[in-house]
Amino acid sequence: MKPRVLVTGFGAFPGTPVNPTEALVAELEARKGEFTDRCELATALFDVDYRALPARLEGLASPLSPDIAIHFGLSAQAAGFQLERLAKNEIRPNSPDNAGFIPGRGTICDLDESFGSTLPLEAIHAALTAKGLPVAYSDDAGGYLCNFLFYHARSGLCSAFTPHMAGFIHVPPLRSLMTPNGLTLDQLVDGARTIIAVSVDRWQVETGEAA
Image (cartoon, rainbow, N blue to C red; front, side):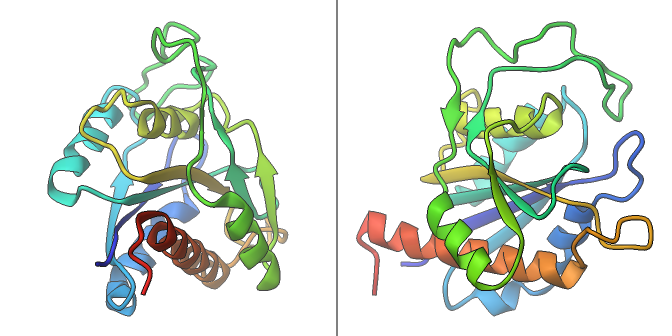
């Protein structure tokens, strides 16, 4: 049995006309055939829109029913693949989304808890390091749409969205003259393929589906 893997990214947002996760998702979608031996890969792109995101995530559950959900987002502060360990019930209402909306409160919902990633982060960290790709852990996914998505993916607020594993990973801007310390698109794709492979391996062990 092959797991169903959902990989998502975000489009551009105010102040950031180029989001590398949009290009990453497009590349993975174009290469879906490369994954057929290990998993059923699906991709999706989220608008940077607080009010639309929960329904969009819930809507992905019905046709896809993913076993593994790997969400990517951009962080200008990331130096490489930034493995987010904690989804916090927190919004820092200081930046509008693409619809011009700024949430009016500092929490996402009335729950009193945070939720950890269920991706195999230690194994992912080791595999990316072995490939020579920069990687670090983080306990702060920010107060914008990235943490908002991460929290919805892990908290059960979208009741139909219940993957066995779900987590969030930040990436830096694409490498350019302006951002020489960023990653190339090839590095992003290589890293994402590694993250998918490690997650599938762990899913097989945890579900007893290992060959």
